[in-house]
Image (cartoon, rainbow, N blue to C red; front, side):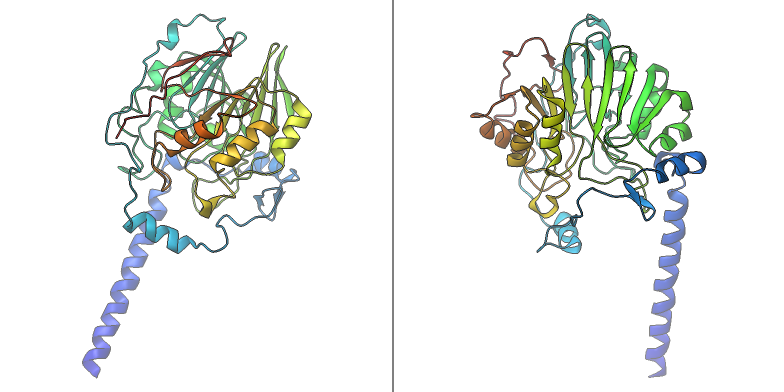
Amino acid sequence: MKRIRKILKRAVITIVSLLIIITITIFFYMKQSKFGKLPSGARLEQLKQSPHYKNGKFVNQTVRPTITEGYSMMGLLYKTLFKKFDRAAPLDRLPSVKTNLHRLESDSNMVVWFGHSSVYMQLDGKKFLIDPVFSGSASPIPGSVKAFKGADVYKPDDMPEVDYLIISHDHYDHLDYETILALKPKVKHVICGLGAGAHFEHWGYIKDQIIEMDWYETKTIDTSYAIHTFPTHHDGGRGFKRGQSLWLSFVIESPARKIFYSGDGGYDQVFKEIGDKMGVIDFALMECGQYNVAWQSVHKLPEEVRQATIDIKAKRMLPVHHSKFRLAHHSWDEPLVKISELSEQSSYTLATPMIGEVVSLDNPGQTFTQWWVGIK
């Protein structure tokens, strides 16, 4: 009996020691610069004034559980770690077009998608870069969440100088530390949610470069350009403390047109609000990928993407948030297959370019191949 007690005591001591070592290791690992910075001082006081900051964090307008009723976080984690999902990543190299962005006509109106949610856009003489992730990974853990073969052909050096870097929220698949550092000499201004400016200042950006916005704000960013921000049902955070910077959707309004970017988020009434307030949207970039019924509240299913596009009265729509990283259980091409089928009888025109293919904003009749067909 004494021997059993000794063994149990040693086991407990060993387990506790391991837990302490792991906790200390994680603590110091998360002190690295890539994890960003929580807002403090005047910035923290500013965001506390937001009506959307409550009980020490930003909250969604509608209270909904992240995990759908009938599912559990532990169950999802078990499936992710131990269940095999068919075609979750392509075996083949994804096709792409290597467009020289430095040589584009400065007055051309166009969009180039780089996989997932990274987009370059020229709009009536201004240059925008949205949620760029060019490091080949969407995780702070080395070797994890790697880009699919062929999906990471663009790097920071391929980007020209941009007038506005737009960041929808600070998750790693939208705000990439290595990319943001490399782009620093090329960026004139940053537009992000309240609190996210702390990351940029921590990484060497100048405070005067950074425009932090709340939901339902409009800022004139040039004499004839405006940014309108709206809610999206999602979350923010790069560590254990969540909700310290705000997640946004945007309408970019130029003299000639309006572009909508959904950011990440589930479907709700805000899309109809945007349509009612902003009128017709000329071109929409809509999150469509990394979804699951289990986390439907924070990522739209394809049928909800279709409805949201109709709600905002978009003429054309480019689905994003797919074909670069595996962050969900569906097959890698399912978002494209489903949204293509759902969009056949819709009020909008669907654009499905290859990575790097130029989408003209002045040519609503431009057609695209179903480039994903036949890829294993």
